[in-house]
Amino acid sequence: MSKSKLDSRFFESTRGRIVLLLRNTQKTVNELAETLEITDNAVRSHLTALERDGLVVQSGMIKGFRKPHYSYTLTDEARHLFPKSYDSLLNRLLDQLRTRMSAAALTEMLSDVGRSIGISSKRDRSATFDVKLEAALKTLGELGGAAVVERSNGNVFIKSESCPFADAVKEHPNVCKVAESMLSEIIEKPVSEHCDHGSIPKCRFEVSG
Image (cartoon, rainbow, N blue to C red):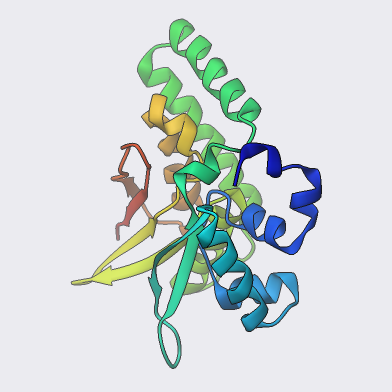
């Protein structure tokens, strides 16, 4: 599908809404069906068409109650069709800040931004650890991530195959400190960032304590 076809009329269609929902995140058929208020079979039909057009690709599996569910995300080609005004503006802003502040000061400022988001997202300080984890995942999702919790040998990790700040992170990896401090504030435990800053950035955070 050419860029000219991704106009306002396309985004008003069901397929266009699916593309918008998958921007910077991944979702299962069930999640898309629930949001769009259509059947699972209807979603699968649209996804098949979007896969044929090279806009959507199957990105992995998520454990389900009875069976695993496939998740879907946009292809690199599809992401490049979106306007980049906000991403460009953020990168230019960070470029200017980097010339006027030390690396440590800029990192601390980004951490402060994350903490402020985390504070505004808190609900119940007496909540259990798992409830706080769910709140952290939800907040990250609202920013454009699609994170999951993985547990291994007593360690807890928050991972997402789609970074909400992907285009900024490519040029300014310390932007990940926003998410790190935000997650730490919500979970109320130390969180360390081990993100993949490659061509397709991926979120990787470890929860301590």
